[in-house]
Amino acid sequence: MGTDHRRASALVAVAALALPLILVSAPGTAAGTEQADYSLAEENYAGSQIALREGVHGSPLDARAESEVEQTLGHDVSGHQGPVDWLFAANAGAKFAYVKATEGTGFVNPQYRQQYDGAHDNGLIRGAYHFARPDISGGAEQAEYFIANGGAWRGDGRTLPGALDVEYNPYGDACYGKDAAAMTAWITDFTRTYLAKMGRSALIYTSTSWWKLCTGNNSGFGNTNPLWLARYAPEIGELPAGWEKQSIWQFADKGGLPGDQNYYNGPMTRVQALATG
Image (cartoon, rainbow, N blue to C red):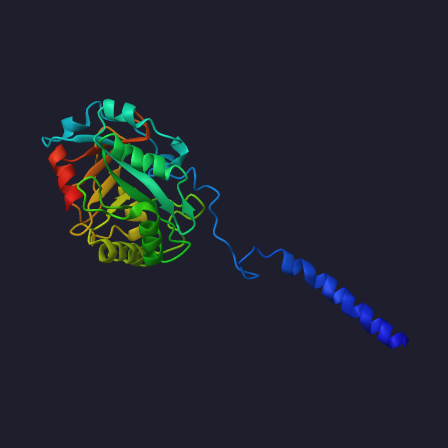
């Protein structure tokens, strides 16, 4: 009888020790599975890490002075701006806008609908962008998540193709733990999936310094994906390999419009052409 009692007590003790292991697992997540970190997602936006890592070296008094090509003013916004006054933006001269839609496969901009629809309702041509997280999942998976949560292109003449924001990792290693070949493959995976699903090539948003560091200055995207380049300086400077010109220059991280300031490299008719495809 004493032996049975000791065995029963031992079984109760083992069960008590095991119980916390069950409780610590998040609902719907297998024990031992690591969840992705989105703690900075509401503050991550196109250029947030570029301004932090590369600095701001002034902005052009008139970005159009660098080129004989007419430039068209626009801007980009994300959730950290909160609701945007789109009537003000339109009256201040904005002709187009990009809005952050998603990050990784687990974050949707809570201000997306107000920002994306608001731009359209006030006469701007608008598009959506995805903040890449190559450390979380494959490029194809993130492209599909982006499309399903605001990144789809519409042939209405008012919607720009989606853009892939690839920049320094705000959560750790600048290149998300990938070498140049792996990063290039990830970007290819995303852009090919977007093209296959939408029939349009996604823009690639980046900086020349990040592109050199994390893709080895890969030249394979210049003929397929329009370039949206970030550089906060009086001149646009060197472009990443493969591109002969930028489609959009993000020339300042603040200014007269809400969010970041951009110039499309051409007149408004070229912005319209990008929207219509």
